Amino acid sequence: MKLKPFCIPATLLLFMAFNVSAQQGFVLKGVVMERGTTNRITSGEVVNKRTEGSVNTNDLGLFQIKVNMGDTLFVFKNEFANAEVVVQSSKDLIIYLNRSTDLREVNIYGESKKQELDGMRQEYRNKGSFYAGKPPLLSYLFSPLTAIYELFGRTPRNARHFGKFYSNELQQTEIDGFFNESIIKKHTDLKDKDLENFMLNYRPDYSVASKWTEYDAIKYIRDSYKKYTDTLRKK
Image (cartoon, rainbow, N blue to C red; front, side):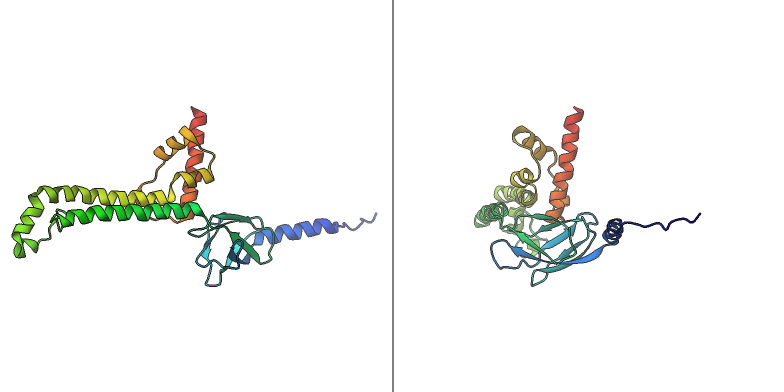
């Protein structure tokens, strides 16, 4: 008895070929543009969320990144809203970003805060505290009276305390740029008391946030949000 040759349907062959090519990966080319304009966005960052590999757009807004079919690309650039795009084709990709007013407000707040602190620091200088209560060693040789005043005077003592406050406020303002109510609301469904508790309990340290990109901040917020909701469920 002769066995009939086994035939694989053409549709199954196509599916298998597609599945293999999707797993192999390829280099995707694309461009990032500002929505509603012909402006190309330079120095934007494009991240493959699966591999965490990233590239920057060049002077023409172009990028190339290795992906698999179905990967999600996370795209961000200062002063623009973030975007996520799922790779569904090997064709060149156009990604549009909207201008963000939220980030601009945070930056303006940071600039005005620094100007306010700089003005207060200048007041101490106007009152005669030149070294903020920390005179350099050479001042004891060339201007000993000033050095002694800087060590024991009331204004220099206050200036010394203000110097610590100044540094801390600038650090906290930098953290606010990544971890603020507007960004957290955009990437979670927290509000009211839950939002306050989350911001209080999961505020990052400056040593961590100072090394962040915007992608790192959003990843931290989402990971922390999962921990927060898991904790609420256990309670």
